[in-house]
Length: 316
Image (spheres, rainbow, N blue to C red):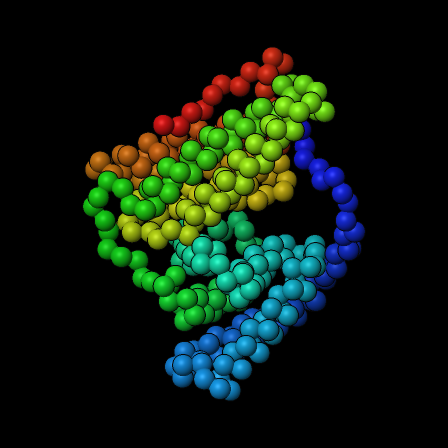
């Protein structure tokens, strides 16, 4: 695919390289501030956020954001940095973005982090570090429960209907995947033609729009409530896609997908009833689309053949 480059260049500051002790110190400061924030939020909730209590909460929020920013701006050779970065991004999104969809997505990630193997590779470090990370994730989950009660509702009983909001979201996601794949194929190198031609610019715009729609559809799946075990399985598929889209290294992305495909059956919905069978059919279609996505040059794949031929991956 024709790689995307902006037409202007901006000055990017050199990232701060953190040593392991510096990372530990900043991580400790963040977790301490987060615990204080949770206490302030619980106090404000019990007193209706009146007077000094509201001021304490606002000050605690500001402190936590100040603790997140240096971690997000830094780099480190310490492998623990990736997990700390994830935590800091989640915290900052909840406190600053104030987007119900993003908060719902983070709520579900916090709920599912012990139940999906896809979350495990994102965290590394000693048992002590993982315990501290887990405590911080628990504090964030409790903060969301206090400050965003609608986003933190308990999971409802298992549904017996053919479709839930999650399955409908997932169908939309698969359609967005198909549209994105077709749009990306039009700008693969063997079929692009003259990059200065008007049709190439139009195809690039369509590919960018389709990728944006795919990202939005993925977030919508991750933010949707899970009403039954089959919904949790589809959520995992959405989480896998988000990881594949977010990874910056083509080799890492390809290896992760190969590992998932080796254990594909472990992700399948269980049961012989009609709903489970329908969900498994959707999962098979999803994996087929993922394979087509990762064949694209921009995702580390070989791209089309010399004739620009790619088999269609249409979704009903």
